[in-house]
Amino acid sequence: MDPLTLVVGVAAVAYGLYTTYARVKSPSSFGKLAAMRSRFGHAAGTAVHVIAYTVLPVVFGLVAIVLGMQGKSIF
Image (cartoon, rainbow, N blue to C red; front, top):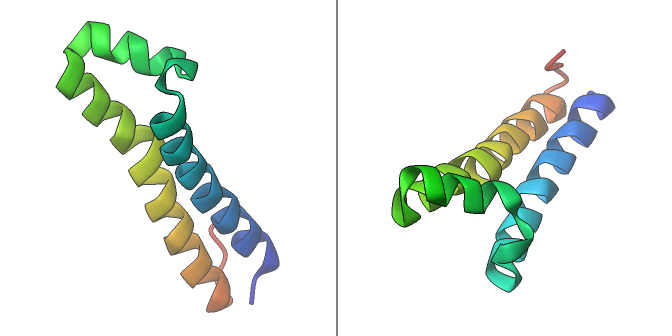
């Protein structure tokens, strides 16, 4: 088990889940979301923001957790 990789993985998953929660509760708190919506349009800007700030961190975090449990390091 690699504890540093596990910590990074848990932090990434927590960040992705926090952005999901914050986007539902207070989407105006994301300055980059508003910028992406104005640049790409409402639907595409939201999709880019969701992928970049929610999906990718959660996927990365889950991969890091699995690797950490196997004793491998992401570094």
